[in-house]
Amino acid sequence: MEPIVPRHWLALAAPKAAPALATSTVLILGRIWNANGAEHSVGNAALMVVLATGAATAGAFASAGRAGDSVIAGTAFAASGGLALAGVAGYADGIPLPLLLWALTTAVAYGLAARYWRTDRRDTIAHERHTIERRETHAHVERVEALRAGAQIEVARTGAAYAEQLATALITRATLPGFDPDQLIRAGLPELPATHTAKEDW
Image 1: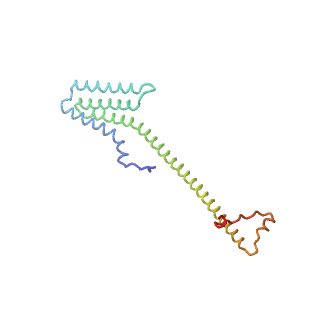
Image 2: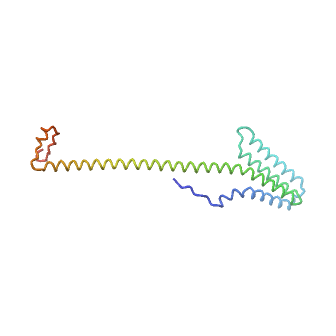
Image 3: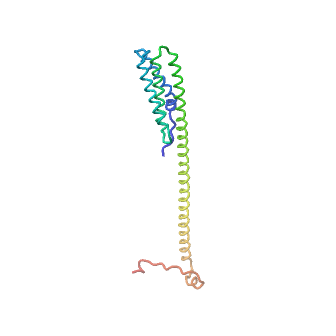
């Protein structure tokens, strides 16, 4: 399992700056459009009003009902605000009104983005917590299995040592002078098994 790698600070800061960059880009393009003939152009302004209204209507339909898609709705509303900002920046002859609308649009964009950032943060924390819990569970299972295997090995080792000691004791007792297996039988002790050699089998 791969470790959790913290993201670079640029990767964390880029989403935070995205709404401001987007609205600033729209404002700059609107002012360029203004300098190239859009100033006081009723036709261009009417086009932007229609497009902005259409995007807002699409966002309203996307967010309506239980099956509404919040991502599509947010995107549509953001597009509507951007089109409105571009229309005002292109039509107005001064900069104060476009700047005021830019500030308003940026604030709305950050308000919409904050909701998704909170959701993403909760999902990230839940995923990291689940990953840590799963690692702890696997580590506990591995420790239990290691203890169980060690206990089995120790039992097997103890049994082998006992069997070796018993065999050594039997051999040592059989070699003692005056050892009589018949006396053990008469005393009620179990008879020792006879030792067979290859010559006896022949």
